[in-house]
Length: 222
Figure 1: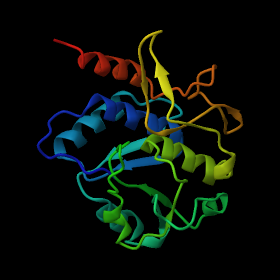
Figure 2: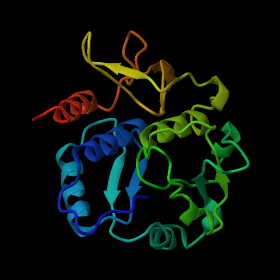
Figure 3: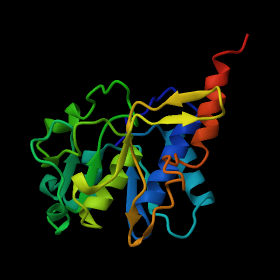
Figure 4: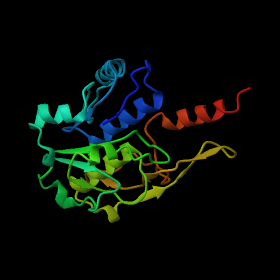
């Protein structure tokens, strides 16, 4: 799923937060696999996943091998069982895609590239069946959450409430605009979404708001 930097010895904090949120959005009974990671990143993340395991989260596993190796190992190499979420796909994801025709849903690229660098192109040429989630760029954790809403909760794409390019306000004078589409208030598995604040502002992965504020202030250090 991810192309990792072999030289990097530290997993960026925002990556840890995004990955943890993906586990939460996928939910109990699901599995989330992160592929093509360096050994150091894979070991570090796997340790954190074990340390922070809790009820209601998907099981998560990190792999140094690529996604094709994982498909060969787990699915016998059958690409038709894997749906590639591709912004350039001709068909949009629909509730019918959750009828069992796909066993896995594949999200390519780097989380939240802005502008998008079409890293999915490397997977597109391999021949996966593909679907898109609409015209607006999403963070990958949002894309996973939307996919689950469609294929598991049977909510059509155009019935899911979103906030496009939301402004995250820290105080009266400081804010940052997120250049993505995020989920808005909704119902997840017949309960109010715990990922959305009461005032309708999208609730980012736990800890992300603080990290954004910290990074913003770093830009003004002298």
